[in-house]
Amino acid sequence: MQKYKIEEVVQALLADELVALPTETVYGLAANALSPTAVQKIFDVKGRPLIDPLIVHTHNVSAVEKLSVVPEIAYKLAEIFWPGPLTLVLQKTDLIPGIVTANLPSVGIRLPKHPIFREILIASNLPLAAPSANPFGYLSPTEAQHVEKTLGKKIKYIIDGGPCTIGLESTILNILNPDDPEILRPGPITAEDLEYVFGFRPRYTLRSAHKGSQISPGLLESHYSPHTPLKTFKSFSEIEPVEKMQEMSAIVFLKRPTTIRNSDKVKIFWLSEKGDLNEVSRNLFSLLEKLDNQELKDIFIELPKKKGLGIAICNRLERAAQRNKSVE
Image 1 (tube, rainbow, N blue to C red):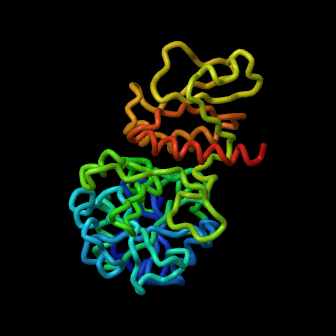
Image 2: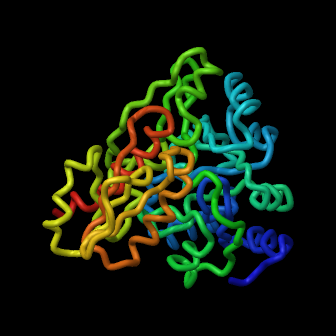
């Protein structure tokens, strides 16, 4: 994978080219958020529907004030969680083209923490629209090689910043009505974390996407999916007995299992030695990408309990499993 100087990457962005960049969450496919021409390339390369809006990334709150109407609560959230994996849905200004926001008057904005992304934001002085750097609906990339594999023939610039430290997309919080904050997409910043600011936990209900423009990324029913059929389970007893499996499958546990081993037809994996959910989230997409290249019949994966970070992990896995259900 070729290495690029920051100056070269900045010039590419200023010329409306796309650049895959590392963030602390997942790798993003970045373009000048103020250029409809550049943003259209994101949708074309990813095969992303225009009803699915993009998150805009910038490097300071002053830039956020130019791009959106900022309520007082946003400053409190920014002080605690920015830079970091929290996206705020705000009322946009006319600076942001409609193609970024699915022609809605709102926009999702965040300040990423990854030093490479921040350096490029500062050097370019551009807000960057940057969804995950993958074909639409597929597994989110957490390493540069994942981007190279799926989009390497379509984009020139892929910046290798090493594995993502979080591995899940940002939490998206709707504060268009500051008195009624709503988590649209659960993520690394949990409802418990946000309670510190609001004095109560923002509501979260599993939204079903409608046919029109979405207020936020991550709401479509099928998303984050490997090509291999993925099936979730809460208890190992829900799975067909291993000895009866006729074709090669993988079973993925949250922590190292003690009572089951590999067999001729089953490969056993785990996401964390002790089931630490931060480690689970960091390894999730990377392991699924690895398994998706092993010609398996099925991938069975354990769901965590729906509390704290487990809500976000369940959200990704349950949406990933929908692709398999839709073809059954």
